[in-house]
Image: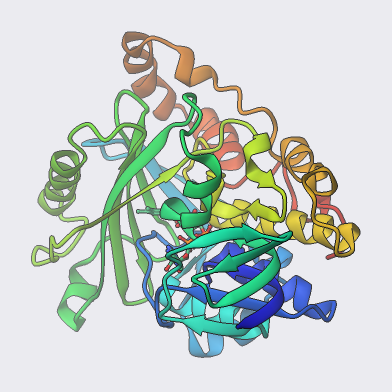
Length: 375
Ligand SMILES: Cc1cc2nc3c(=O)[nH]c(=O)nc-3n(C[C@H](O)[C@H](O)[C@H](O)COP(=O)(O)OP(=O)(O)OC[C@H]3O[C@@H](n4cnc5c(N)ncnc54)[C@H](O)[C@@H]3O)c2cc1C
């Protein structure tokens, strides 16, 4: 039987960030993932400079062999409308491709890799975890995304307050003529909201790749809404007429408060496995990274004793970092939301200060406000 200090289930941004930190402190870490990397992940692939800072990514070096699309503005509005453009004087975000980004982080982490191996069983024996009857560890990390088996095991019946985003998207490489026909600029992604403010569609150009998608907080007619959003972009000639419509779907949970269920004896959940995506933008890469860095801090302080009480600071630190998840828009009746949405989205001050700066760019939470103890 193989053994390690820490077994991380899932090699997405959460898992590889945690491995990277723990490996830098000399721990023996295995990452087990059901996929063989490089693998794709359904995602728009939008990250902020705070994320590259937290990950200590040299963006010039990264961009040499991979797509890194600088973003200096956004077009925002309601689905079907022309939208308004907000410009910034600096790069406020980047577009990446998940197949490249996740592979880069995984390779850099320096952990032992068991790829193409799905976690099927886990049992607690004499204070250790035994996974698939093949690996023994004193600390098991659930970083397997929305369908993480460790999360299933730990959380069973999930909290009622959880809301799940259902999303659909397509990403494709544009031909020369498609690149000429595409009116979406790489430096200005387009975000169009549903009138009930329960979701939005995006159109995101990353060099010669185009990503079009739509996510909603309920799964009511997502496929139909995606198709009609796509057709609207095509009819308005924002995207090439012959853009493929082979959408892929995925789901994930939004953060509405940290939970004691994120930990148990010898086990912790990070990233989407814990349901940490930002409740307004749906962005989950940064929160996956931040949860991994927070978990690393707690693990190192626990110094090999991973009983629940030693891991207890983890949900408390997440609550401190991400807040209690109170949502003003969620509690408003739908009619009020519909009445407000168009007026809000057409307001330039709201688009910049609230929608973009606060909800999407999180400028009120700079990377350097994260604990420096283990960074
Ligand atoms: C359509 C869509 C668009 C999105 N766009 C953005 C965006 O632009 N920006 C942003 O910040 N966030 C975005 N998100 C959210 C973001 O993709 C996730 O929050 C992020 O990937 C979470 O990272 P993670 O490491 O926790 O999980 P994941 O990236 O999901 O990684 C989990 C890993 O676990 C592995 N795994 C799963 N089950 C098992 C098993 N049984 N055994 C072994 N391994 C397993 C998987 O193969 C996978 O590699 C989007 C999500 C969707 C669905």
